[in-house]
Amino acid sequence: MALLRRPRPAAPFDHLDDVQGAIRELYARLSGPVVKAFGTLALPDAGPLTEVAAAMTRHLGIGDVRVVVGFGPLGGHVGEVELAPGPEYVVTLSPHYRDDPRDAPAVLAHEVTHVFLHRHGIRHADLARNEILTDTAALYLGLGHPMLAAYRVDVVQGTYTRRRTTSRVGYLTPPEMGYVLAKRALAFGEEPARFTGAAAEASELGRRRALEDYTRPPYRLEDGTVACPACGHDTRAPRTVTARCATCGSTFVP
Image (cartoon, rainbow, N blue to C red; front, side):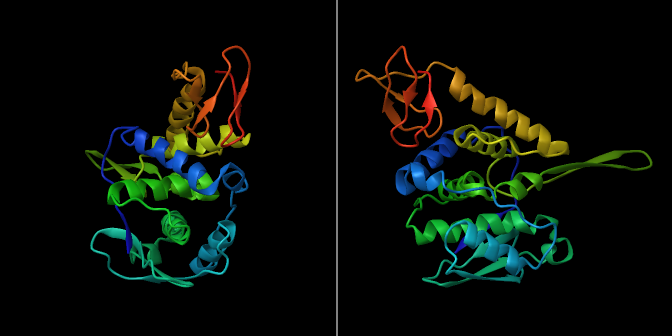
């Protein structure tokens, strides 16, 4: 069983090492060509959640999977999936999403990605790292837009006070989500995703941090290898010319 909880406050890039490790693992376990074959899924503005889940499974190349979406109390969590042998998997969402389905695709993206990783035998024994891996994979493999779009900050003006409310879904912080989306855009040669409000601010913070991976001098090992700024894998790099990563195929100036 994989649970998606309501997030707790954290520093903007509190999980960055684990996020970078998750990107490295995706390239190591799936290969560069396979990772870069994933486009970005465009979802309709509305539709039955079973159809949304089916679109996600097709996007991830597990179209033989059938995801059944239901609702039920989850004790503070917002979603869970039973990771059975398949091909049918049951995803349960908090009853909140029956009345307010705006962010249900964000929860489904996480849970369907759990199924994808389960089918490929990719997981961490540590629960927290496994959930970070799942969020990162969903974002990097093209299901990420609804996850960051679910981040909203609203201010409610009362008679004498103003109340600030924050809504978001996932284990990564919003700037970390923006970082993963920017890392994907840079590696894939895509235009950055566009957001509004608080999600746009988080996206820009993440983009700036992702650009730092390309501008800061890489650590060079004694054998002449450096970490690729796109996928994080070590690759041999001459000091004076553009290098090409053997894992993901990205080119960069070491």
